[in-house]
Length: 462
Image (cartoon, rainbow, N blue to C red; front, side, top):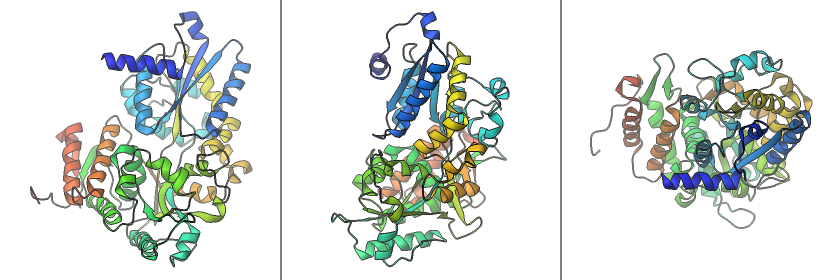
């Protein structure tokens, strides 16, 4: 407990620099927390612009931006530490939508239904509210764009390996065959480094990155699911889950993926997007639409030539079955803290940040897919980069996470299960059995089920 308290105080000094404030002064101060990825400057600059606008429109209000430089799992941990003290608790939070329901259950967030009903811009967000709606039916946030996932590929490297471009894989085997061609060609980057044929995240240290960009992208292509919406139960065994583990096993056992040292590195997501792809050391990467932000001017891996070298293909379904391609979508949303001293002021900040012009600015800064109908139709959005149209089209085949209270813990088990496969510690069948046991322990026997196509559990010791 003492260590936790010390961490909170240290974080308070590092993030906000605030001292004790009386209640009256606190009401005129608005704290806004957000996750800052790596060394990119575009999102912090966007926040600074919204801060200046809001302070000009609300004389006497001091907006205190609280950027937290951390990866996904660390951000959630630090955010909850900040919430543990009145000295550091944010009033407005920009957070990953998969954390919304767990934060609702923890009592951190304020329902916004009444306020949203009076906001004239809210109809522009029709359809996005699913990402920020709790099990109680109330809406707790305003989405600031979504994202999609596909296969980023280096045209030059694939051509050198004898793979036809533009590349349009129709099945998982097509993806693996292209990676095998790169491996067999023994390609090297311009600076003489070995080329990674295919990056699919599989380590537990990056948590949600492996769960969503890796396993759930694969599972979506099988037709199976993590959660059965009809029965409202978690699926602990399915042929699709085992096949997804099998795909990862193939990638890593056939030397198609990164080295295990890199795969298990907690910084792999930043290394891949910010260094390896710009250095042309990755031929194919299953990754997100936002990675463009790394290659733009000011990004962690600024690479002006990327539009001439990179392209994106949809991730195909397992055997080419309908709908032919898959994606997963998430994104970030603004939420108001339940303990905000002035929730109306906090909500006013959200509506300012999410108006049409600022939404467009955020989509461009963070490379998000538009969720505002009027911005989607804006030529400035359509012209932002060479592949935005392809990435936006993936919304038509996308899936969303079952982001209920239990999901963050289950997602961690997914990444742990994946790691056990890529390291060779467990077979796909054994890993699925482990996953089933872990999820049953989290939610209880009454809230789990096996899919109709689930293979039999392996014998003990097999």
